[in-house]
Image (cartoon, rainbow, N blue to C red; front, side, top):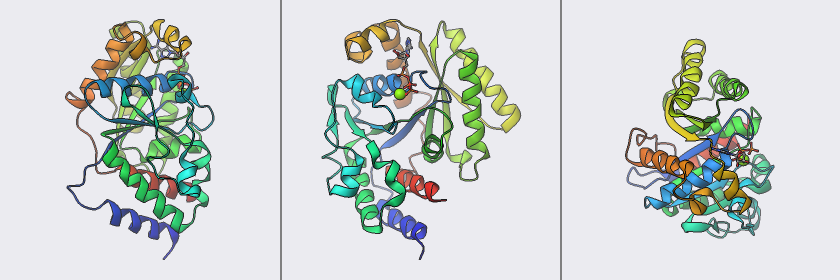
Length: 294
Ligand SMILES: Nc1ncnc2c1ncn2[C@@H]1O[C@H](COP(=O)(O)OP(=O)(O)OP(=O)(O)O)[C@@H](O)[C@H]1O
Ligand SMILES: [Mg+2]
C-alpha cells in the first residue's frame, strides 16, 4: 500500500461514526496580503465565543506570527511539538482571551511532507481530539497564491475570502479563486467560498466588492460565491492593535466590532449556518499532506 492510501484509510478509520461531533472548520484567506485576515480571525473568534461557541484559531501563516501579536501572548509550543516531540494537541493550545484557544502551526506545517507513518497516526489522533475541544476551528492563512495557501484553501470546506474595495485586492482574490478552480484537487461542489468585504466605507461599498468579484467568477469560471457581509473601515482597529488587544475586547461597541458580531451570528444561526461538516479537521489536514506530496 502506498503512503497516500495508508493515510486515507487511517483518517477514515479514526473519523468514522456519523454521531461523532465535528468542529466546523473555516479557512480565512485572501489573494492580497494585509487586507485583514488575522484581524478577522481573532475578532470573529471572539464574536463566536460571545455567542457561546468554543473556538480554536490555527495560525497557518508560518511566516509572521500575526495572531500571537494580537493576543499579546507567545505560545510555548507549536504543531511540530505534536509531530516530533510527543506533545498532545492540548499541550500546544495557548489560551487567549475569552477562552479562545490558539495553535501555532510553526515549522510543523512546513515539514508535514516528511513525517513518517507513526508520526502521522499520532498527529491525526490528536487532530481528531480538536473535534471534542472546539465548535469552530478558524485557520488564518498567509496571503497569495503560494502552494501553502492554495493547499489550505483547497481542502477547506468553508472559505472566507477577505477582499477590500481596492482594485488590486479584487484582482488578487480573483486570481486565487481561479487557481483553486483550475486545480484538479479542488472540490467545488463541496466548498463554500464566502466573500467578506473588509475596509468598506458603506454597506453599498461592501456589496459592490462582492458583486464585482462574483460576476467575474460566474462569467469566467462558471463558479459561485456567497456574500458573507462587510466590516467597515474603522480606525478603532488600529487603535486596538496599538494596545495589543483585539478590537472586540478594547472597543466592543465600535462599528467594526458590531459588524463582526453580525457575521458571527449569521454563521451560527443565519444565512450562513449551512456548512459542510463532512470534512472535519483530520480529513482536512490529511488532504493537505496528500496535496503537498503530489
Ligand atoms: N476593517 C478595518 N478597518 C481599518 N483597518 C483595518 C481593518 N481591517 C484590518 N485593518 C488593518 O489592516 C492591517 C492589516 O490587517 P491584518 O494584519 O489583519 O491583515 P492580514 O491580511 O492578516 O495581513 P498578512 O497578509 O500580512 O497576514 C492592520 O494594520 C489592521 O489594523
Ligand atoms: Mg495575517
